[in-house]
Image 1: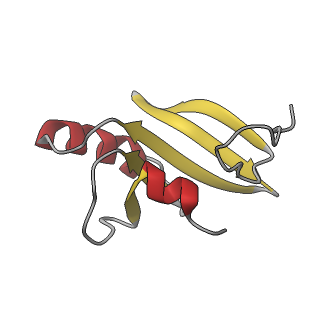
Image 2: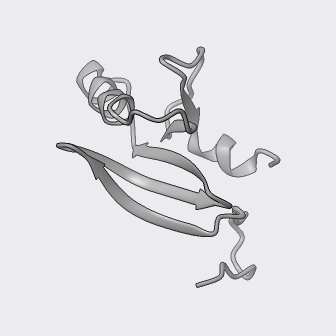
Length: 97
């Protein structure tokens, strides 16, 4: 179903979205556009170490090299770990493609 533009939230140009898993790890969203995948984990907060570790393990378990991102409401400062980007969800929604 195509995204509608009558929402105040910017729409991403994504052809399809699925919920997935890899072995016993849950992947919140897998976005596919033109054969290119992006993996997303969504967490209210990753400030607690065990939550951060759980979200990282899920994305780290995927054996391909497509982009992987954790979206959170936390204000995140830092560099990607294991090529997994962590970004504030509001900043992600407002960033230019």
